[in-house]
Length: 412
Image (cartoon, rainbow, N blue to C red; front, side):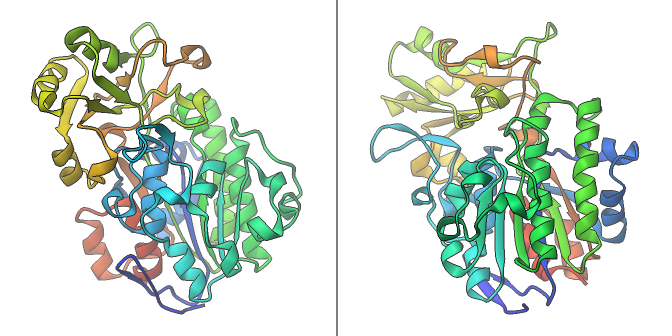
């Protein structure tokens, strides 16, 4: 199991034991802190006590596809090409989902690990991540499926038949806590059955979108996750947990979503020719109603960028407006897959397109969302002590997409 491999310019030398990396979707560090302090995550507390717990910087836009792509490639979007869940394709002029591996510009470390002889399993709650990031694994003898469509898993396409039988339960509802817990249960079962020894388990953020850290439903969810984490810790694996992004409430004092409709503002001020893309857009509208803390603005007349940026910066709730070149450099994004302007909002604010574009009726309990700077910092927890060089790295500016580096190379 200890074969060394390389992926996208990074070298991985995992020890001769299983590697398990979990992406707890939407998990700001406060979720762990509250659950641990209230005794609901004793296994996570043990993991941090015996190993390491700290903060790492995710990728902005702090969205699911962007950060999961960076985690499994080990490099930022400027290299891997995934700039959002949704983007304006410059080659076609169409607004499309980034839901296919064709949008990725490099391979994944999962396929590199499989080429090195590791038994790779990539299990995700969301089917969209399986389609974007799971290519090439099955062909190398690995296993890939989502809890969302676990009942559709077939050996030829997913590396396993009758995946529901792994844990003996049917497909969970995607809008539920169980969609995430199911992923962990399946991963623990594959590890116990020795069908996998190099696992990436990516959850869904439905519960974080709906509940704050201290709410009873959130605490129950984290307790259920922790039970499965304990199963991993009872094995000989090295386990690492991080998140793709954090989560914040985005509501006014009356509980309604605190939205700035950017395209409506720009059309009223400048007329036609300002097109807003909401990169948070994905099939899971019940999570967020396609409202996030970052949008892209595409201009028919790019020379207007300075004037438009100054106008947007005057709006309460807008915190940053970056030009294409500035965003590509500072946020490490692919310049050809972002807008002429990248607009970010404050902690309690989301940005949208127009009132007609967003269906707020799906948001029954107010809005919790992500996408900007205030959801950028996320936890990193490692089950084993770090080597001295990785202690120094953790004290610098570690990234969430360094998690496999820490797990494979960084523990004593």
